[in-house]
View 1 (tube, helix red, strand yellow):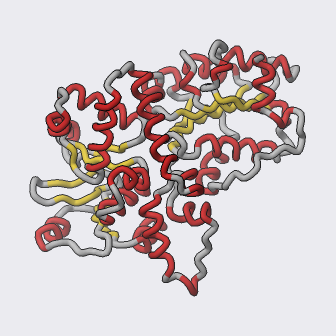
View 2: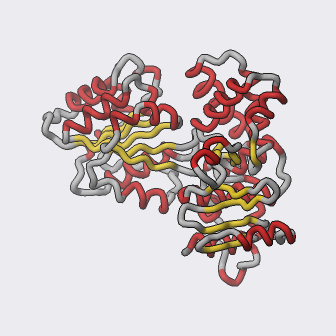
View 3: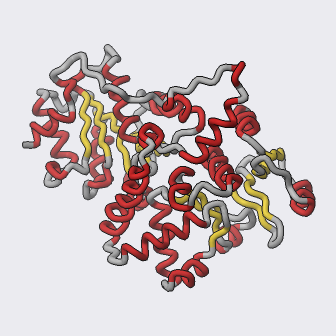
Length: 392
């Protein structure tokens, strides 16, 4: 049975001209992945369910199949959440792969494991494959907790690449929209549409609302409730809806506990679970270590379209701020707050950013903004200003 399953996953073993069809390219993400092909590091793709990790792995395979220096039969791809493979370890699967292809233990291979954390002790097995010296490993996971918990075995051996939802440029590409310079006035109109739809690839393509509902249900049922043995599914869903309502705001875990009638400890546990599955991103308050740890976190949705589905498309300023956060997430932003006035972001390189979608700061906030010490200060009011900032 296992040999049949592996052949289904790897049609290029028999079809030399095989390529995945109808995959939409993501050049920026693929450039990052391609830069890591030659190195020894084990590459882990993480991110929200259905954000495009599997498609990126398949784009990687298409790229590898086009390289004359890499033999088709030396590439193995498998999705480890397949029930038919549940009784086999990662090392078992690799051994069967080498047997099928008559590969010696010294032959170099490329191993691509989708949803790798479904396998028990995956970290030890990946370490063994890395230490073997003949395996280049790419893997994906939709749970940051699983990766964090097992990190000790992979420290110094792995590089984590987080896959985020489509940005506006990728959204236009996926929709087949080309905006000529003479039609630049259309950019704002399409951007408003993007703010509503968001960047989940399949939802962008199909526009089917059920896709978003099914995505969240899968995360709550499979990635949280089943793995953490939580029986109160209704409580989990209510907590998630509360998080979506608070996207772009400072969230008090105790207040959310009081609203839902749960304990502060349960609130904290739920919050961490939704963070670990990339449905929300928390950012800390700028300050000394104790302030960063003890102050309430400000939260953002993992995708703006997902947020809009559950809250309605309202408060475009908050939606735009959420999108800006996703675009600057790699700059490790924190929020700035003095108890009265709040500034949206201070990045690690001391750039102060306030997001005002087609709006202006009030006098007190503007005075606070002007008096904060920073290397650079930016007010982002529209997509053009965001693109200008990101270009530098």
